[in-house]
Image (cartoon, rainbow, N blue to C red; front, side, top):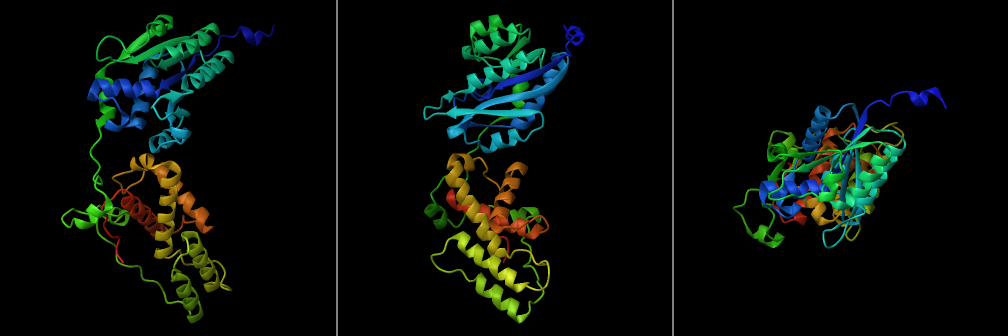
Length: 359
């Protein structure tokens, strides 16, 4: 037997969070809510609070936090995309069926917990859950010598954790209402509840500012002043700028790119960024694509806007660059126009008035 096997295993722990339990228990406790639609969660801050609390309670270093949740067709929501980009956080998604039931979450949790225990990657595991389906995961980890610390959320009455799960865990702690309260807030009524026709008929409703107005201190920027192009280049760009009836967004964008290439042919690398019309077109195209692929309920989480979470803003930029076939990093103004087009399409989708960015 190798001498290294007699060395003590360094203390290390992982945190396993059943988000379905955490959200349901906290929503019921703080807001008497039975659906996630009734409240907002500041998930990033909540995760930081949980890891800080574990650091105080558990001996050793944190390996990582596992966040188990579900989404329809496993298509991550805005919140879940933000969580997946946090350091030392691993997002695991099960499927959320039409009845609002999570499928596959307990199996994923057991697989991760048992794998870490079997490979001696951890000495302790913090499990924030309440369902009896988590019992096999606890027993499997303990069979490899891992201590399991069960956390729960203060119940409204009685207990919100399975009795056998409590019995089998090595330690049990209940997080009080004051611990979770800062990270939950009742969801406000979206300003775009009326259909688009009702919004168009209303003249008294204040409009939602565009991204350009937000990033420029609520003041619409003046139109950019561009140096005049040579006659041949101006003719090429001008002809590409005219939208052809019946053509899709990608077709018009292809024309614009071709014209821009002709305009700078023989002059080396282009000094001009994409024009405003093209960027608005791209922004709307990406927005429409996201509504179709990710679903209206998912995109609704971005409202009221117009500032996107950094992770989602990066995804918008990447999708736009794929369509354009070029980088937008050097062109701050073009990126703002991109956001303008994105939000114009989203606001129309949900029947919300929008401010203008300037001509």
